[in-house]
Image (tube, rainbow, N blue to C red; front, side, top):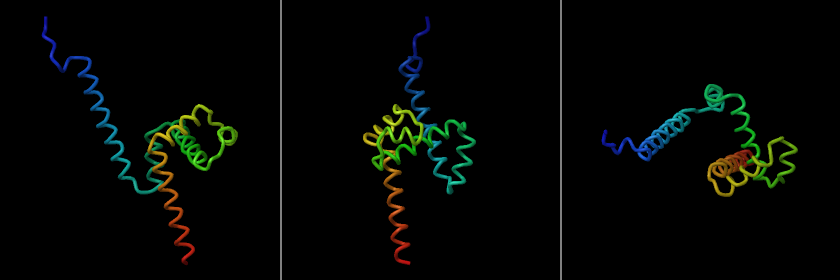
Length: 121
């Protein structure tokens, strides 16, 4: 009988797979950093995702923006058709996550800077 090597154990292989997955994730996110324009992102996402995956991501982003504006869940559902389960998930991410909030805050900063620049001119 072959002696089991530590690299053959299920725990070890799942850890290796997690490391590989994190590495692939990092490579994907670094690839996104190379994109410069909205059109660059559009082209990349069209190649990377199915149309329905892009639609779902766009829906979630729209829901996050509406939730940030304190629009009630039912009204968001009526406006977007996004399920209340998805709205709830996005709301939870806004409270406990970091990604949506980060982009929303940066968008607000950029909008405020634009208003300041326009009012000076």
